[in-house]
Image (cartoon, rainbow, N blue to C red; front, side):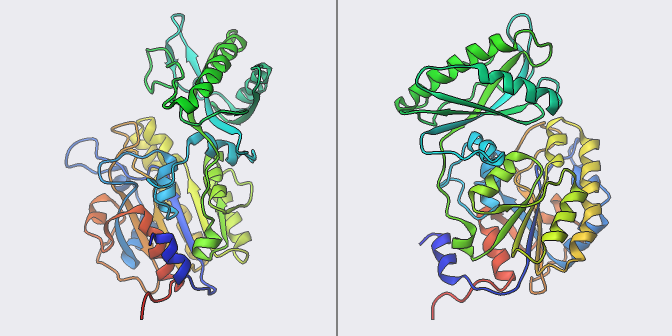
Length: 401
């Protein structure tokens, strides 16, 4: 019996409210051994108060030592085993902007990039091109025509866009073309299995035509493709947990993942303050709220320790408006760690705090990596966080006689 079979059997209904506040890439590392992490450096009186009231621990996104992408990181937090349910980034991006995928589709996340005179990547994100400019370029890419395949191109945000290939015989197992470093050319699309060989060929043709269309651009004169994926099948929150769930996110990919697990996407917030406004407006309409805060991740990926500290402090300042709603359960966590020191996602457990009136407090007095290590939740796989939240909300019955 897997966890979802168990929660289906034991789920109970009541009027409780659960909030999961996810600070993307929250966990960090000190810049020097023995120093403080970004979270420990930040002034976080409100998060520290949650640590005193609640129970803390370290969330392991997938398995010890495994560095997750954002998709697996969030799937784990939502209670889905990320090893059993695999979702490519393309499907997340496409679903996030409201594109309805079909069984004949392969979705891909596109990134505009900057190529030098030798065809090597000098900037993987095209200088974080403005969304208004990149949207015009995405529309231009609709000029690409490939025999036997429908091609859809949709703008997303900043340097990102979505490509969907629709046709027969398309598989979703193709390697990314982004080498993840600068100074080298994009990688040619390569199928992982024979069933995806046609997709790799279609992607190569899309790139070839796309490069010609973008050739006169100064910043976004190239493109890379990531996260090739077909439409996944995930059991929805209402079915496995008995929860009417809402997602309040800014970035499309996170809206996409939430939609794939059956959450409603509510509001059109663009700032954390606006996200809390939406939370308040929707408070009586849902049982569970997922709130996503992106910028602890992007500052970590930029290697900007001080900027990540400031973003953590911004997050902390929003906590009083959340606690004023008196949720039955409040969880603050991250989908993975993104230490500024590494400028990338990492495998390190993510500081997590759960607050309820029936949690067993553990003596932690601050919210941070070192405190979380000795917290009462211990080091746990992220997929167990949802059952813990349900139990603290009184939404799981007794197992067995």
